[in-house]
Image 1 (cartoon, rainbow, N blue to C red):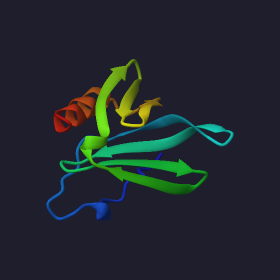
Image 2: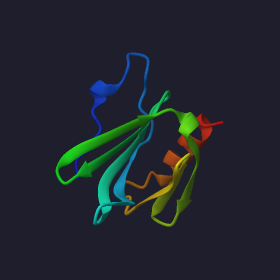
Image 3: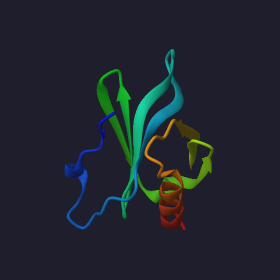
Image 4: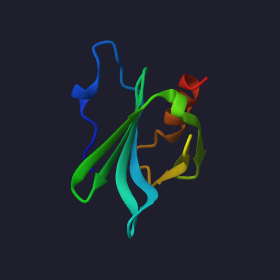
Length: 106
């Protein structure tokens, strides 16, 4: 899968962190799995989801994230609204991603 994240979204002083791409599990209508990407930066957190060929992007501050855990081939991000799991992460950066995000929410 190609990246969903668009570099043009970054402000001049913003730097990309280690992102992860995989299958995001959450319920929307009858669908429970979506291809997506979590892309943290030094200032914000991007969640980009492929909604049947159309990218949906949610940008949030680190105040909206309580923590990130790594579990086997998955990351679980605990947002203020609850936990969302991403599995089938193929790029091997799950722990690097989790460490980066957890450092920014402190």
